[in-house]
Image 1 (cartoon, rainbow, N blue to C red):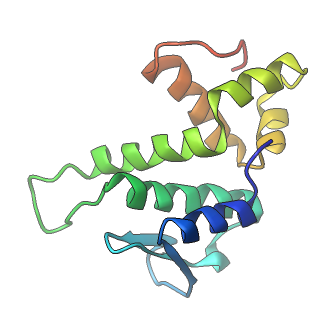
Image 2 (spheres, helix red, strand yellow; image 1 turned 30 degrees about the vertical axis):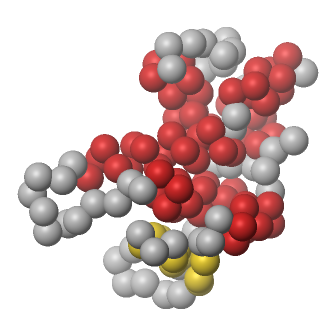
Length: 141
């Protein structure tokens, strides 16, 4: 079964990660190495976006993927990609994706709805499984 937002909050808490909602000027979300996540929910369009956003930020915390904006030698995208991959595996696990397709969910919008994530997030997860992991889990996309 797909992970719900409530289950994601429980997962975060059980790993010592605190999630706070507050207004931010330029950011939608942010995470810190000490296990704090800030989210400006007013910038998110619904539960699916919130789920993907928080999973990404938890990915930063769980994988230690943090960067220093003041250090020119740190590659920001490397850390963002690592957090994204964590979120894909957490919210759209390959075995569940395969199972959903075998059960007739073949359109990207159907799969996004099934997993409770935004369609662009689902499409990136499928691309991750196809390209990065070198396997094609489905015939979608």
